[in-house]
Length: 190
Image (cartoon, rainbow, N blue to C red; front, side):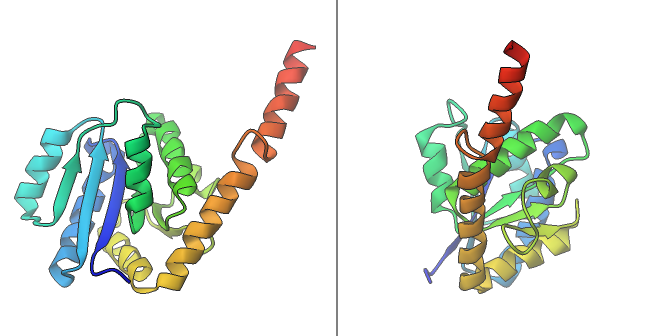
């Protein structure tokens, strides 16, 4: 195990993206552990996140610049370099698509995922098999779940491997999702 742990987040930076829940959870982790670092890559709200970091007195946080495109190689490398990825969520229905897209990126990185349990996330991942779920907005549960993944490297590896395998088998053009899409497209154009 390395001497430090990177908790990674890639997504929106406004309160309705759920980032605040992660920041508060990380403040609990940072007080208990010296080996954790939070790395945030966001496409919006960076100034607000920097103010939140200052207000919470966080010391081990880095805010990366936004990726020029969603599938930027540096973004994907950052996801792969993270020890655990956190998928925060929102009560705002318009955010669900972005939340699901982030879930697929996280899955393809093959890293363990801790996710707030929304219908969109539960429709893709399975608790304890391909991710560890926590209730929406529950700061203490999020901190505890991140720490559980950090402390059990074989469990973390299993979560990441299962999520990656699921992405490869079901959520790509050659998998089940692609087959369903091709059937739908052919029925539309016949």
